[in-house]
Length: 259
Image (cartoon, rainbow, N blue to C red; front, side, top):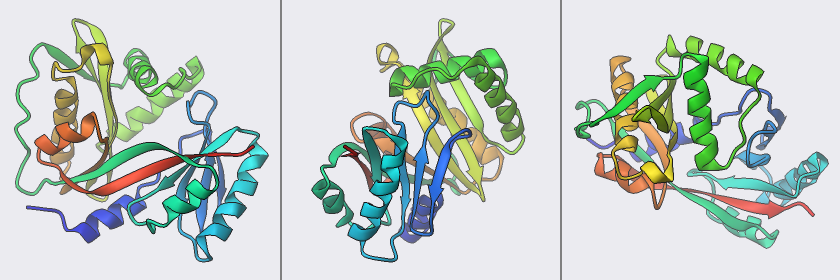
């Protein structure tokens, strides 16, 4: 079965993640976040729900963004936003930085067969060593830096609590070397899949499928009825569609200069 588009739109709109240690600037109309120092993208507009003309709200947001003394802010056009928002960001010098497919899978009829995982080993990041591997893979693929040791320890403690309710991150190892990782958050029966990453030299060996399979199995064991994910158009998106996920639209980010 297919997930109704209005359900996907509502769940996509509700999905906004702000990392610990981030600084928020939030109003009813937008959410601007200064990320922790180890994030590759320091400043992001994660939510935009204007009640006034979009141009007015964007200019107000940009004024507040300049207070962080960063060269740019990444601004997201989400599934529910007016497509005209792209033009607003472009008119302010924004350049298209990322395009993601919004994909969903109905879990009511069971899990897709994603094939064998071969000689890959999967571990959930529930100790400091595995959490470090998880964060290192993500940093290598997405261009972040590694957080300090105390933050890795705190992240491990958070992961232990999250795992009790079905959330967490899983790491794929090839011959003992961490090559991929991905996370899952369970929210009201929806499995939000995030951070799927495989090192370039290990691609094509089933690591992404194995990580996807582990997360979907955990979601199903906890009674999730739907999986939701955003996938890069050229990499994870095609894999997800072959696994049975349906595309419902896209999200785009624009890198808007603050000079």
